[in-house]
Length: 234
Ligand SMILES: Nc1ncnc2c1ncn2[C@@H]1O[C@H](COP(=O)(O)OP(=O)(O)OP(=O)(O)O)[C@@H](O)[C@H]1O
Ligand SMILES: [Mg+2]
Image (cartoon, rainbow, N blue to C red; front, side):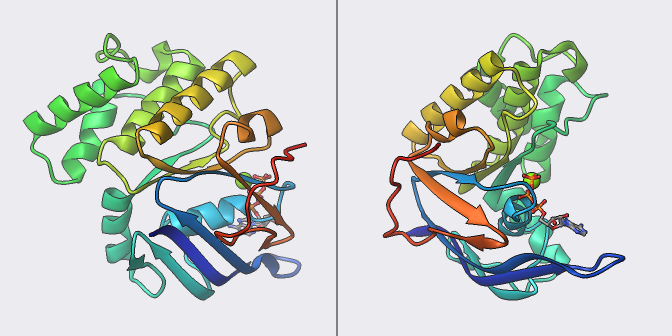
């Protein structure tokens, strides 16, 4: 069964000088349970594609399916609900709520996802425990290390048990030790069945995934389910 599917996806941004054709007909399928690394030169459209799968941006043309739900042609209200319940999103720079404790950063999206405060806090504690932050619940994000902040952001992404975890350069702001720790965590989540699509510029990080997909100039070069990873990540 397909977790993520993009067919003929195009996205053009209006810019001052000339339109930027960020996606020029993307085809990509990711099956449930896969851990896919997405690589390609800066500006080739990786973040744009991830944002479209996340329901944060909308394709101009083409068809996008996430977990058997067609997300193209939906209005913003539908997409907001979809983001809360179907996808977990992790960015390079964490995007945590700095004025809130680690626990509240996780409990809030749980409550937005429909849980009571009590259930949300309980679920948040479970996820923080799972991610090794069980003793950090009362701390503010600023008092955590970069790796811990990213684990907090991953906890937030996982709290509503998303079909897919979408991560845009999750190790990009971390030193090699912090990056290795996050990659190890992703591998563990994948082993537990989590579907992951991760953008990275690091061949070493991509090596931790189970399939490598390459993009170039607004297109995916090897996006079909039959296009096996050739193992060459250099
Ligand atoms: N909101 C926007 N408005 C105008 N142009 C944009 C916008 N977002 C992205 N672009 C352009 O679309 C193209 C693809 O951008 P995108 O961010 O998807 O690339 P990327 O592969 O993620 O690059 P990087 O590796 O540097 O993060 C780039 O030329 C970028 O400048
Ligand atoms: Mg990007």
